[in-house]
Amino acid sequence: MHPRNPHRAGYDFAALTAASPSLAAFVRTAPHVGPTIDFADPAAVKALNRALLLHHYGVRTWDLPPGYLCPPVPGRADYLHAVADLLATTNGGVIPQGARVRVLDVGVGANVIFPLLGHQAYGWSFVGTEVDPVALRHAAEILAANPRFASAVSLRRQPARECIFANVVAPDERFALTVCNPPFHASPEAAAAGTRRKLRQLGGGTMPRFRRNFGGTNSELWCAGGELGFIRRMIAESRGFAGRVGWFTTLVSSREHLLPLKRALAITGAMDVRVLPLEHGQKKSRTLAWRFAL
Figure 1 (cartoon, rainbow, N blue to C red):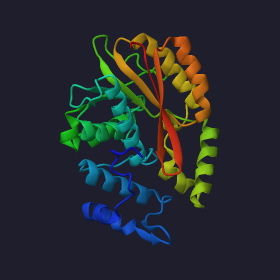
Figure 2: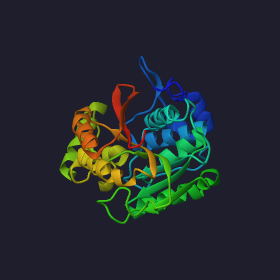
Figure 3: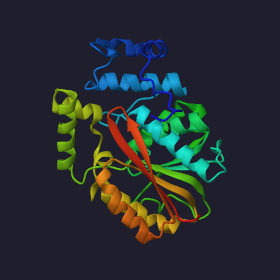
Figure 4: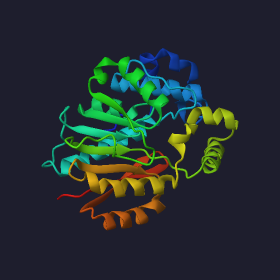
């Protein structure tokens, strides 16, 4: 994990349960592991997230609607620290901080995780966009319950599912950065197969139980063309917003998607393309970043 990631040494369950006592009901001791939780238990995962957000980020109230994506806080933090370093490469080696650094979160979700982590870590301000009105409404409720963050985050409905930046970025706006966790699968069937694979990796359980924990809603899990199609659309549309965004970035779950995405960026005319490696335990991922002006 990134050296600034507060989760790089693992979970301090003593500190987490002291901050959020409700987590204690889910903590158990595993051989050769020590204190842990059952990561196939949706209530345990949500309780862990609440404790992490409270203890490390000062988020007093956080919850999710039934069935919505419960994000891995350490992994999302790693993404933000990596792109903070990216911003430093075009800012004299210094990470820009404070509300003047505006970040566009494409698909902010019901969990509003990137704005919460990014504002606490660097003081950045965020605009979160979302096609799902239920997710957007719940994100607004989280922010209203956490006034320290609410003043730094604004939310906008994206009315067209096929659009990424159009409709939500005004002609006179400028963002230092965009962030995104795109839907991975290309169909509901592929998404269901993916949940079954993850369930096997966790060592059992039932499909409905797993869905409530990690599954997410349709707009979170799948879209036409899957991850590759979504990011290709993002790349194509980004050309028209080159003057309004410093760095475009997105998570890329599949390493096999990097080559076709780099080809798409070359066609689009991106002048600077970078791949930032991310590692969370055994999970390896990466952030694709590009800009048009040097």
